Structure formats: C-alpha cells, structure tokens
Length: 63
Image 1 (tube, one colour):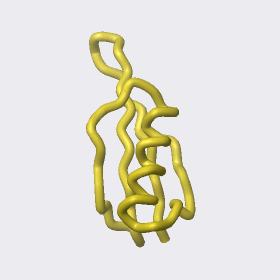
Image 2 (image 1 turned 135 degrees about the vertical axis):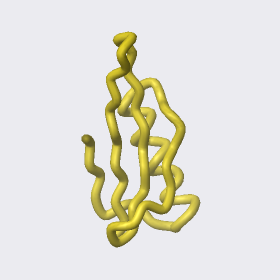
Image 3 (image 1 turned 30 degrees about the horizontal axis):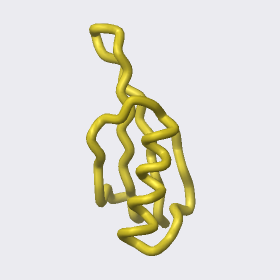
Image 4 (image 1 turned 90 degrees about the vertical axis):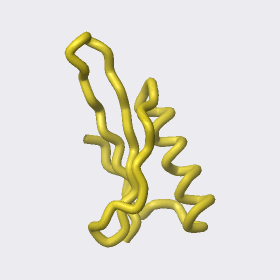
C-alpha cells in the first residue's frame, strides 16, 4: 500500500510548516522539505508519487 502523509508543524515563533512523506507498506520512502500550506504539500506529494511510482497513493492522511 502506498500512503501520502501530510504533517503540520507549528513552530515556536508562531509560523507553520507542512511536510509530506510517502510510505510503502509501513516504511517511509521519501520525505519533503517544508512547504507553506497543506494544499501545496499534498499536490507536491501526489506529483512525486505519479512521477516516482507511476501511481496515485492508496490513501492520503493529514496529521
């Protein structure tokens, strides 16, 4: 199973960062650099999945 996870980090200075990672069968295969918002993170993750695996993720999880 291929899963895209979107993580939301709140920083001490009040700023927010969003990171995405791709997991295959419970093991992380890629982790992004921070992005400005959840929508950009999800789109980048979807694009990476299509380019790198040729498939869309089976599940997208926002943490």
